[in-house]
Image (cartoon, rainbow, N blue to C red; front, side, top):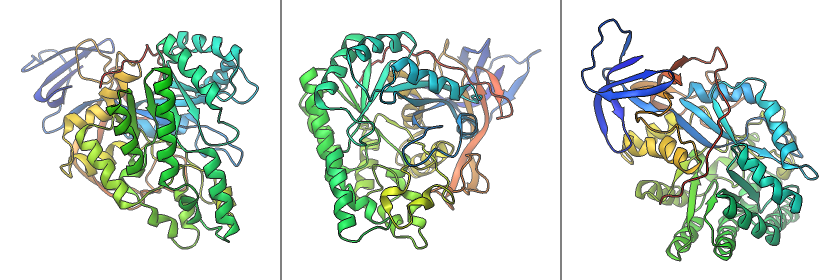
Length: 451
């Protein structure tokens, strides 16, 4: 296939020109390619991006309170139609399971049909010498990143075990991310709010304030320094946490940082909405203050944020979130977003003049591919997979639960007016419209840390 007269978003610049694909790969980039006897797509006035990569999803996940609304098929379809051609989902080892059993559970979910490509991080919740040996099996299977939790009693592990994970990951050339909220502080915060008679959604952010994230990040950095290995901070939400990352980097620790659209676009005033509507915005970490939003945008603009995932974890409001009416701690944690991330960030990042198209592609495609070992994806370069997004930068539309493809009964971005949308998406050169599950499991290489 030949793409003619596109504004190509290359790794380091924009270029008006042509791109040719064959056998699922990009085989040529240049100008004025001949179209004699060849089908082509006229892309004049359109942007051609590498397929976007979501570094953080929970597409088909249960927790002690509920189970996500969409399944692997519905949510990868929604991701694809928003321009995301690959997701990295979190497979989780439940207590008592081997890592292989945890992985097998998630592979079964993916068998429902994947409409975009996918890979897995592996969350470790039950550490032992057996688990240590199994980490090598995960790396051999193409899972080269792991996740740990400081919060949630059924998921978190202690410092001694965390250090053991870090040492083994360093030996294997794998990367470890951390959910940075101090679990004991969160438990105490929840108890304190209830003791004060606060049971509404507005108690949620009060129970886990910014300092709970910042202290956890400081602790995570200290552990990384002890183990002498790079780390990954998932879903950064606060200015205080950002300051800890800056201090750690200045101290010589290699730290990758991810944030999410909700922490760039929504603030904690949403928890005060009437009629229990605030429950729609209960996720962890919670939404923060406008000052945190400003600080995170500045970090995006200055290159201190490495990538922007969604932490997509969608629960129905009407049947799941509503269970927490009368007790905010029973509201399932999580919000949807996998479908709308590219357009939200294009509108509020590129169109708003905060970042340019190249930086946008770096955050949503190139950098995630480099870090997470997606060596054939993430950029418009000869030899890479032809995962492509033909983007119309002038399309105006409004987000609504009524027009979304996510299988969830609400969207936290209801009414957001956007400019820019995918016009056509390609997986390995094949047009993909969500009618056929074309996604494949991606075997990832070792991560590459370049900051």
